[in-house]
Image (cartoon, rainbow, N blue to C red; front, top):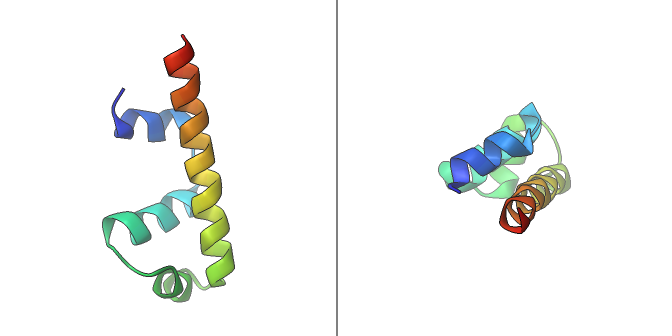
Length: 65
């Protein structure tokens, strides 16, 4: 399964997607992403951590099937 499909199936919320795109696609620091999103760096970190966990759960389910 490709990453784009995993992300889609993980059903990330808007803020999680935004944080992931800023940090992993645009290669921004979490601090810069936080400033742009008008939230704390810790909130960006939390969004990314939750997103990665959800993507990993989808991947695990797919591998088990």
